[in-house]
Image 1 (cartoon, one colour):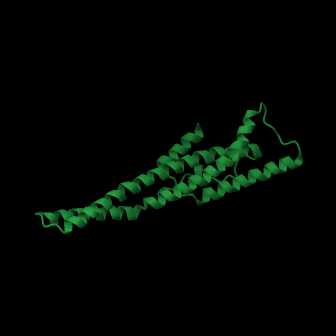
Image 2 (tube, rainbow, N blue to C red):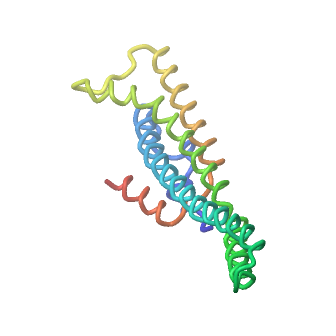
Length: 178
C-alpha cells in the first residue's frame, strides 16, 4: 500500500498557522477532509470483503453438496468450484479487506470526533461580523490550551491511522484545495 504523501501526514503541532483560532480552523479543514477519505476507503474495503466473502461461502456450500452427487461430471464441477473457493479465500486472506475497512472506519471516527469538537467554535466565529479575540489573558490561555489539545488529538489520530489509497488521497487533496 502506498504511503500517504507528506501533505496529508503532516503534523499540526509544529506546523502553521500559529494563531490559535486559525490553527483550529486549519485542523478542522484537514480533519474533515481526512474523515471523508477514510470513510470512503472503509466503504470500499467493506465492499471488497463482501465481494470476496459471500461468493466464497456460497460456492463452498455448493461444492460440499456436489461432492456427494453421483451425477455425471460432478467430480470435475466439484474440482473447479473448489479451485474458485481456494482463489477467493486466498485473496481474502492476503488482502484482509475486513481489517482494512475496520481500521479506516476507526480513523474516520477519530477525525470526525475532532470535527465535531471544533465545528461549533468555527461556526460561532463565522456568525460574528468580526472575529473575536479573547479579551482577558485567561481567555487567551484557555483558547491556546484548547487549540493545543485539538492539535495533539489530530496528531494522535493521524499517527495511528492507516495509509489512504491513492484515489482517496487525491480526493482529500481536492477537498483541501477547494
